[in-house]
Image (cartoon, rainbow over all chains, first blue to last red; front, side, top):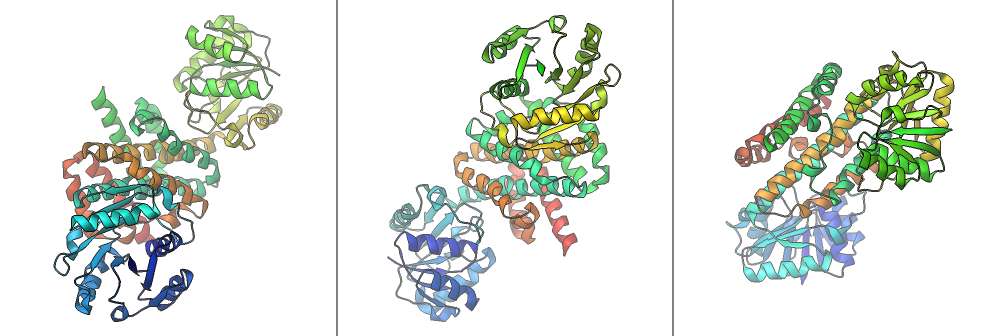
Length: 260
Length: 260
């Protein structure tokens, strides 16, 4: 199966390298940024271009690893360039598959559920790949392809993927922001963030032993109003974080009050 | 140095085992629950009791690993039992050292900054131990003891420890609650939480490469109002989480708006 990869950002970069290292036939990569196209193309020893109309029409699968808001306009242009009979997929957690329906008959999703950074190695073997397609035969083909690059392949509908994306915002974006709050308070108080890293790591490692609900600890879990009030008083120096503290504490209190 | 350990909960349990396995002389353990006292005492081959007035007066250091609100009453009783000249410390992140000042002259803190669960092994070698004491000589002695069980020993004042405790609530308690939100939404939508574990792990692993502020991604980071509104609409089914989403999103938006 001949694959064209459109997009050389964080996802495109890692996906291109992984497909290539698993022996898949990536025949061309595109980026609107020529340097990025060249870097990825040369990196995986394949053709590259920064012109959409130079994309080959002889491939079997076109993977769009572009920003969410670029999926629709790029797809339209590709259809207009004679690809409308081809199989096209995107790699987005947030975009319904139907974004392609106006221009294509064979379309789908190939969504690796991970946060990618170019400078960090990605351990694809354990990255969940969420697959969907408009035709059963294409869904099967994409599943086979995904199994070449990961041991965790799931057929996930648009609706399920939308739920996963919201949940991912909570456990990744919001969690990272809380790390930022901790780091930022410590920095302003001249205390090293390093001190918190073993605690952060253990918070995640504990998930091996039970659900996060079972693992909850802390003043809100214990209903320890005295500590909560002392923390809120301290945070008067950091009004932007006082609100966060109150909302998260109320949410934990509410959860454990409802349970008992 | 002869040590008495008072408390056989999560902290006492792990601290007792670690002190013992590092060759320290734990001469007695106490728990008001006789079974817990016995289990820990036998586990580290030392004497145990569930009576405060049976605690030996011949030790050099008394470590209180009890609930925050039990520190003061237990300390009072120990002073009344003839220990008022001894060195006494607690293991709490949230309690000022001065809790001992009314009854003792030699007192301090021996605070392992980690979340402990009896059923999980604790990697003490990398757990930060935060030390403080009323006397310089005791601070030095406690630091030497802490270095026997961990390579990360810090002299931390009451004020710094209070800051650390607030930050720990953000990065541990609140983060774990967000994991719970993700898990709970997926459970109710019949999607496996396993799908999010690699993402959660990478969120933490990324901290090796830069500050969490630099690592922030997601709709709020991008100012992607369309996705934010779609997520909020989805969360109308989960009103208890809609508030959390809005508050955390606003906090991220505010942070990155202020920066630019």
